[in-house]
Length: 335
Image (tube, rainbow, N blue to C red; front, side):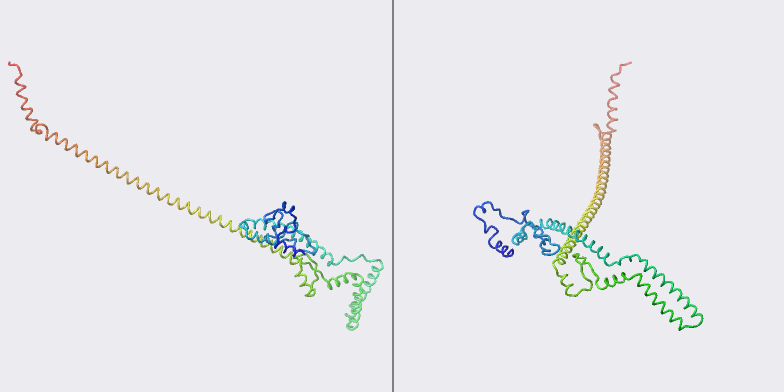
């Protein structure tokens, strides 16, 4: 019936049987609604794994719809929601496994108590007396065996030793009768515990029964749950390791870039120092050239003043003095 109903829902829609009034308030369900099972969307819902088994979880309270699942897989938001749904499923599965492991631990303790032989009960007074008599007989016979052996009577000594062995068997039967029966029962039918699903098994059981257990819902279901948890943790550890390596590569790239910038900066500083030195040298050379040019100009000026004056240099100077001398004498008063 459920399969037929799901098929009709897929073909005709979930609102096919609603009245006109109900259709007015009906809201179509989308895959991202809170009432839709996210476990079913990404992997599997644990409620579907253990139906009619000892581990039955009951019906899932959220919606399972193949049409919604297909819509989710085609949605552009699919990749963004998968990690969220998988994390929730992993958390739910870990709770199941923790409860199962507690059940397995209790099963191991129970098997250990059943297989371990019980401590022997205290001996009654009658059995204690019998053991005392047997012990005395064995002691006397051993003394006789020793005397016969010293006398060289080997056959008689061996006959007495056989009596001693019989008495020892009788003594053992008085002290441990029940423990021997428990060991025989444990050897005849030894129980074991399935580490996957926690079921009790019979060791060395028939192949048909072993195969039936392995293909059963409970064993397969818990196998899926455990495999998913391992796969999820491995993927998470791998992603964490890749992020760590990526951070290390980024740090190494930044270190190389900083080293390269420092190297270029040192080179630029050296170039700037060289440029300043060259500029200083050029300025010094220009200053020297200007100084030499000024010296040359000063020398030419002096030479021009000295040799090419207003009246012809030094000779003109002497001529001028000579020409002024009579004038000075002409203004003197006569004596």
